[in-house]
Structure formats: C-alpha cells, structure tokens
Image (cartoon, rainbow, N blue to C red; front, top):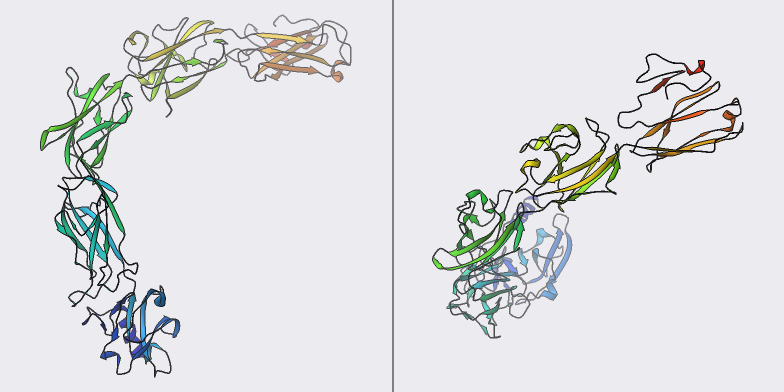
Length: 574
C-alpha cells in the first residue's frame, strides 16, 4: 500500500507527454474544459469509468469534487466548475473511493489564450494600446496553456481575427494569413505584418477558436489587443517656451517606433561650450552622449522625452533644439527655448525703522540661483559691505563664505532673521542698505549681477516710563511700567530713597516691548517719609554694565564698590 501511494503521488507531479489520440485519454493526460467526445483508453481497465474524483487531501482520502461521466463525454464548464488539478478515474464496481483504488488519473485544466502585438524588430516591445506608423513591421504573439497536443492528429488551432478601421473583420492582414495557429502550449509568433498599405486608424485583433474546434463559442477566446496606424512626421516640442537659468526643461520627440534620431542644440556664434543647455546624462533611450548632441531611440510608441539642464553659466539666449533622421537628414524638426536670467527681490518686515537690537525679518524671492548672498553697507562700514552676522568682517568678491548665505526654497522664496543686537561690532544709528545677490558679488561688482536692495533706519533703543503717581500713601501698591524698544529680554529697576534701596530688580519685557513691576502694599507700609528715585536700566546691545551684589553696586566709572545703605540721598552714579 505504501509503495502504491508513492507511485500515485509521482503520477500527480509528472504529467505524461502528448496524447496518442485527440479524443482517447490515457493515464496522466491533461484534459481541458470544453473538450468533447472524450473516451478512456484501455489502460484504465476493461470496465467503463463512471466518475472522476478530486481529493483535497489524497493521503486522507478527503473528497472535494466528483464529476460523473458516461463516455463519450464533454467536460463542460458548468459541470466541472473551477477546481483544477488531478482527478482520479473510478469505475462503478469500486466500493471504496480512495486514490489507491483508482483505475488511473488525468489532469483537468481550463484553457487559456493570451494575445499580444509586438514590433517585429525586437519581438519584445508591445504596441498594444499604442500608435505605430506604416514603416513598422508587426508580429502577433500567441501564448496558450494547452500542453499535450504537439504532433497529435486533429490538434486544436486558432485564428486571429483583425477588425479594420472601417469595421470589416479579416483573417488576412498585412500580407499574412492569420489562420491555423497551433495551440499546443508553445509561444507562436505569426509575423511580419506589413503596414505599408494599411489604412490609418484603429485596429483590434483577437485569437478565436474556429467553429470546428471543441472550444468554439465557450468563452475561451483570447483577450483583445488594439493598436493605431498613424501617418506620422518627425516632430519635436518643448514643455516650456522660456526657462530661468538654473532650471530644467524637456523636449518630446515623436517619430517612428524604436528608431534612432539625432537630437542636438544648434550652434550659436559667440557662445562657448559651457554656455549651452545640456542633455541630462543617463536618461533612458539615450546613447552616444555628448552634452549637446546625442542619439535618441524612440519607444515602441514612437516617442521619447529628453530633459535638458541649465545653470548660472548658461547663456541668456533663445536656443534651437533640433531632431533629425540620420538616414534622411532632410527629415527634421526644431523647437526654440529661451533661457533667461532670473531675478532677486528683498523686503524687510515692518516700517523700515528699527531700534538697534531688534530682530528684522528679511525675505524675498530668487529665480536665478539656489542661494542668496546678503551683505550690509552703512555708517562706518567698509564701502563694499560686510556680513550681516559679523559687521567686522568685510565681504570678498567671489568668496561665498564671506557673505551671509541663505538657501532658496523649492518655491523660489527665501527668508532670514537678522538680530541687529547680535553682531560682532555694535552698529551705529543711521541709514543702512541690505543687498541680496544671486552670486557672491560685492558692491563694486554688480553691473551684470542679479540683485536687489532694501533700506532701513536704525535708531538707538529707547525707554518710556509711567508710574502710579508722584506721591504714595504707605500701604498702597505702587506700579512702575513702560516700554523698552530694541527687543531686550528684560530691564532692571533701581529704587533709592531714605533708608531704602531696591537694587537692579530684573523685570521681563514682553514681545510688544512693554514691562511692569509693582511694589506691593506690604512693602510700602514701612517706607519713611521723603523723596524716592526710580531708575530704569536698558541693556542696549552689550548687556547690563551696572550690576549689584547684595548691598554693593559697581559699573563703568566707579572706582570702588559703593554701599547705598550708608547714604540717605540719591547716589551720585545713576
């Protein structure tokens, strides 16, 4: 029993070769849904086979489909269903339905046919759904899964029916007979379909089973393929009429399918090689590469798109891009693309008047490069400008690292936040000019550069103060408030009076420049009668230079520590 099961398993995985007879089945043959007049050969035994059984698990004998047959029989789709694979044949006298008791087995499959139409030159490039010209030669490619019929008398064949643009249907197309294509599991190319005399328009084709075939009219015909025959001249078009240098553009070529064309930029007198737009390297369909002259092979649809790049060295010029047929130089087309210098803009947020120490947002656009170079000119600065972040560092013409550099975003915008208080050397009050340039150029070398400027006024930071009043009743709250320009983080408040002092209290400044500090009633209840002085200290750009340490204060101009606690009047240093 073990040996028998092993042999049956071997039969399952190793189908027999071609049938001996088209209608007579032998163990191991493959049968296809739709076949008619089938009988079982002598190898299945003297008794008639009455049922075909498919086991979901042959080792356990679990059955998932049974087909009753009475030779000669037809394997119909409705009876068979969709369960393909190995079916065991049993005659009526078998009591136990197990694989070991079968008279033999066959393989049942559903016929499948796939049709394609390809270029004869490669046999790989499909033109299904595409356009071809009359200069192309086509092959019909037919694939099917009907193994076992090779060399068998009466083996099935198929016909390809082509529907013409006018609606007519034919099996004779392009000088080729499309009938009698073998269906034996092999891939068949029925080729050289000549389109030289074909009418322009859309064609469809389908591989069909003829009326003499068992599969006729049962839904087993192939897929439908479509192609269009066009009368096409060589042409070229561009996706842009003009492009800013530094950007790319593309040209689209339309011509014969899978044909080589020469694509080149026409020479311009006076321009050097580095001033031309160049073909982007390593593109599909391009060979014999040089920056401005390449060989382009069109696709199976007769088209190809090619990208050109430009940079800051590309000439400000209207370039002519040409395509020509190397086999017939008189067949050509051309398109013109203008390469232009870009532009730069700059604006400063706000009114244009700022206190020294404020942060100024500079922004703009740049279509001429991927980087904007900024520098500053103004009072007591070098004539050709300095870097914004280091006003002690003059810019150098042509040296990018000496400039304040800002990257340009994908939408051609740029932005930079400049803290006028966070610079190496303090700025003087006065008028300044900020330059934005597409190249690292200083002021004396901007004649042919793309740049823009904006003017600003810088003023010293200021303080305004208001209080609750000029008199105070003991026990009342007393408010000190005001505004500090120049964008300081904080101010310090100093209070001096009779037997009282408050030294350098740090008070935060809000984003709008306002600040506020309150002496609470619990503190004012103990104040002596008399005059008190309030001093507000602004850090300007160099920080708080007068400081306090406990009861001691010090700062510029003080030659010793001074204790206000020993004084009963206003200190000399305020």
